[in-house]
Length: 78
Image (cartoon, rainbow, N blue to C red; front, side, top):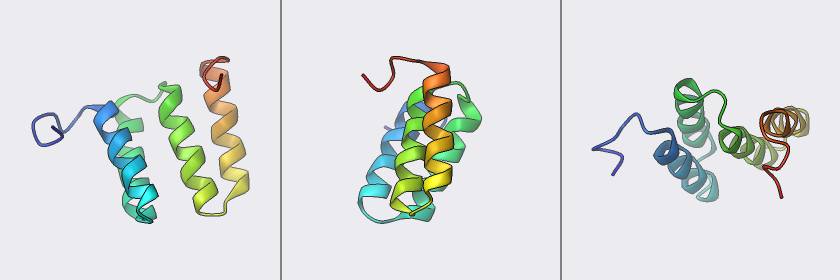
């Protein structure tokens, strides 16, 4: 699907989540960065970046991304 729609932020988010879960943190960061370049106001992309930051043990970045997630959509984490 990504080969047919390489600029779909939803697909890039799913790829980033799969990469994070596989421990491929740098690849996941690249996927999330690319997705955020296409959809900077998508709260779920910021949530994904927050989870990636937690996986990287960067709590300050995680809190910043969670704050951004909630700023974009106060109900995003419900």
